[in-house]
Length: 125
Image 1 (cartoon, rainbow, N blue to C red):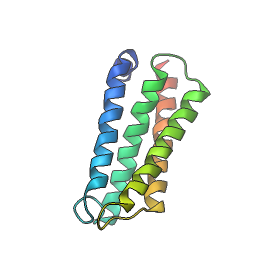
Image 2: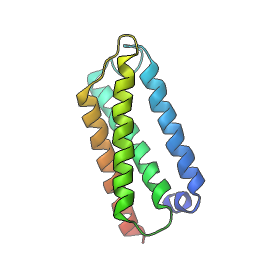
Image 3: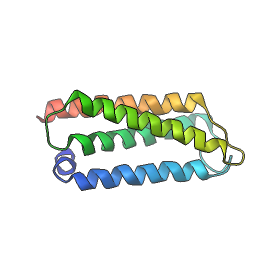
């Protein structure tokens, strides 16, 4: 699967975009209608959503080339900025608010995605 995504960058970009749209969609739901009502479920959602976002973004940047430190940094910056913008966006949604804990959970998922990408790349190449 990773080889397919690396060879077909457009596919990794599509997955990254779809996950970004999905994250935005769930952020537009009023409080109590998304995952926000269930504490642990919301944390799991945040972790998985941002893990996938960062993972596919990393593959989009890397393609089938050798990993450069810049790919890691760019993935980290874009993903964390998207997580922060997601929390800011929620301030404007009825019955929602920004949460530093959610942003930290997002960041944890992002870091795990990058580590996973590095491990897979090491085993794959």
